Amino acid sequence: MLRQILLLSLLLVPSLAAARDKTETWLQVSSPHFVVVTNASEKQGRRVADQFERMRSVFHAAFPKAQVDPGAPIIVLAIKDAKDFRALEPEAYLAKGSLQLGGLFLRAADKNYVLMRLDVEGEHPYAVVYHEYTHLLLSKSEELMPLWLNEGLAEFYQNTEIRDKEALLGEPSADDILWLRQNRLLPLATLFTIDHNSPYYHEENKGSIFYAESWALTHYLEMKEFAEKTHRLADYLDLLSKQVDPVTAAARAFGDLKQLQQELDSYIHQTSGFRYVKMTTTTEVDDSAFKIQPLTPAQSDALRADFLAYNQRTADAESLLDRVLQEDPNNVSAHETKGFLEFQKGNLEEARKWYAKAVQLDSQSYLAHYYFAGISMNSAGNASDDEQVENSLRAAIRLNPLFAPAFDRLAMFLAMRHKNLDEARMMGLNAISLEPANIGYRINMANVFLTMEKGQSAVDVLRYAAKLVKTPQENQMVENALAQAQAYADSQARFDERNREMSVEEKAGSAAGTVQTTSQANMPHLARRPDFVARGPHRFLVGILKGVHCNNPALDLTVNSSGKLVALHVDNYFTLPFTTLGFQPDKDLNPCADLENRTAKVEYVESANPSVTARLISVELHK
Image 1 (cartoon, rainbow, N blue to C red):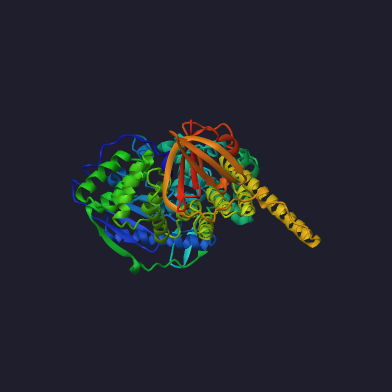
Image 2: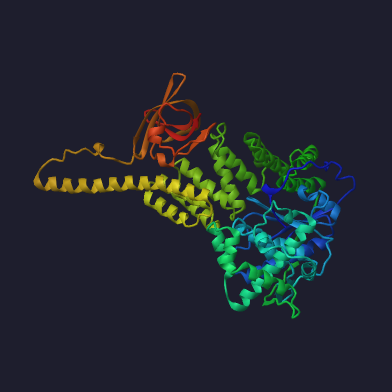
């Protein structure tokens, strides 16, 4: 069952403090693409890793263009029985009458967890493995995919039968067929609008009909498309991406919904037998390459605590972490999870301290380095530690070269400091290539181009981004960024045109023996400070902004802080980060007209040459 961590409810449950009343043995099985942690036997752990590797091979063959290896790690918690499973599953499913899970997929922006029970019985003993791995592969398109299709595809592939040289996809589910034949179907208009908050998704009786019918409709559509060579499902998803409501989108893509309901009912009650797809492929796995590592009690507790933290069972996570740190004060994983919990609470400085300690302990976690650097970049009290921030971002990239956010942050770090701008551009492009649908990366790439004074390149990036937006919020972000980039590009174009005119005038004057009297200083120009050499560290000052003057795209101002006057300059205010504290602006900010006499906190860095104005880095406007 696919679960997003933001949708899990927060209910108090008994602490896990007594979880080690009896000695448990945990071990880790590492295959080429998965990490399986289990409290069952080594044989069972190997078998789970083998099945995940086989399923990956099948999907790679079936969808050769799909990205089957996500940038975040895939950690499988294979739990031996229902009791131990309940100690980790989402609290929303602990209440009486809730749907009984056999497994779930929990995805965060920086980590993938699969939780599964090993004592689940059925016709396909590894159905839960295939079901959860399907969710993993669908996770990038989750925002666009309706819940019924997401679960329907997972149910479709969970009955996969994998052999050495072939795989059978979409074999019928006897349990689902029996349930559907004995119960009344949900109206399709209801099925298409069920979301994560619906009782049909959580309650056992209602949930069963939802899963069974989702499977049946998906199976019917998939087999029909395979036979008729159509693409109705793709058309349906395309309509949803254009903000068409689910019921209308279904009617446009699939036709009359009453007729579809009748066809589905007939399909369920057919007597001729359900079809499936036979795919020829080689799925042999060399399990001799698997690495087996016994885990200490502290290691297994730290890992389970991390899962509970991402699962929003915060109290249980903290109970385990306290015990781990008491036994092993230098446990790196526990420090990282403590940092994550503080980050989730919004305690950024506390989070930074925990991550800094993990980095100091020589953490080999790319996440620890990434979070430390990311929080430090936004922290008023610690932005001076530039060298460590840059080192951590580079460490995150080295430890996980598929993790796009680290490339994006390094690009912005370098651009904000006007440092190695060609490398900043490459880092931004790497982030986009890893996650092409991420609009934020494209906006940041445009900001890098603006810093490089490549206005038209920034416009081109944002125009392409406008074609990829999926939500009104993304559309507004791109429109705002594009307006700024276009204004800057227009300013550059006017400057270049004036330069050409001046060149023609100078040549004409020279040929006529006259003297050119027009001064370059009287022309609009792009301000550059080749004599600026950052002395560091970054400084912060709160005061009243005075003397705001624009010479597009440059901006100069003075900060009056208790009588102390500090002059600041930025070559290109289009790249200047503006934030607000204590209020929401009622219109887009015009730095040239809206800063005068405003209270603000500014970040700046002084020049090694005291005669050169300090460089403005960011502005936080106060109410």
